[in-house]
Image (cartoon, rainbow, N blue to C red; front, side, top):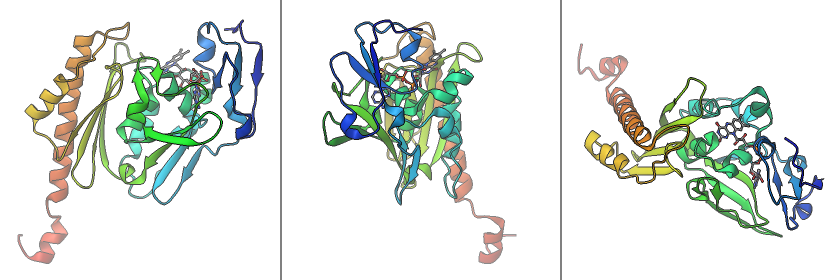
Length: 287
Ligand SMILES: Cc1cc2nc3c(=O)[nH]c(=O)nc-3n(C[C@H](O)[C@H](O)[C@H](O)COP(=O)(O)OP(=O)(O)OC[C@H]3O[C@@H](n4cnc5c(N)ncnc54)[C@H](O)[C@@H]3O)c2cc1C
């Protein structure tokens, strides 16, 4: 759709040029911005020419630039030990997306739009990632993505700030994860999406997105028992209703999914703790 109030689209190539006059806002892929009227918006500041590397690997983090497209992220190669790698594809694939959206929408745009069905929000909160924010003028600040999202269409950015990148701790990529999602129709927008991550220290984090107004995380020192988990899920108090699902359905499905993932994680942990046949031979304990 034409944004009839927009008079100028600026394309900065350096940070100094990333400044916002009254009525100007950041432009990522534009798939949401150009999908509905934007009253009061008179200018766009296109972030996609800043030359940010889509994905950077450091010794302890995977850094995803805000301008990395969903399509680029979908091609993230597997690395040895990244047990959580399937979560990337599972979440990327949770976006109700045409070919155009898939190839142009950015990770940062998805997170900043702060829709409950924000698939990149599901991914990043499931991995306890951190948002790196460029402050207006100069300086930067960080916060967990789970806190960055304040509610439906509300994020933590102050005027003039941009989301620069999202930082995923590598140790979370090596954790075991689970994933469940449902929508009202086969290709529909997410009704609810539950992930869980079992860290090496045993901490287990269940994250609910889609069915709630903002990401909800349930943390346990170990894999919880079924009753504890169910109580925690039902203690979430911001299930909501919109055309993509009713609050009570979202709550019920989230509880079912959390329990399914809990059992899955428990089984995989049991399998891992059982000695392998070769170990039994070596230790002479059985056979
Ligand atoms: C048919 C259709 C289906 C869709 N399905 C879904 C869906 O299932 N789930 C979902 O979450 N969304 C969905 N969307 C909405 C949207 O397309 C996606 O959220 C997309 O990922 C937005 O990314 P973008 O880069 O195109 O953002 P843009 O449209 O460029 O920007 C979106 C918002 O984020 C701000 N922004 C962008 N980048 C930054 C940045 N780096 N820092 C600060 N602010 C920034 C913009 O100012 C704007 O307010 C859908 C849209 C359409 C048209």
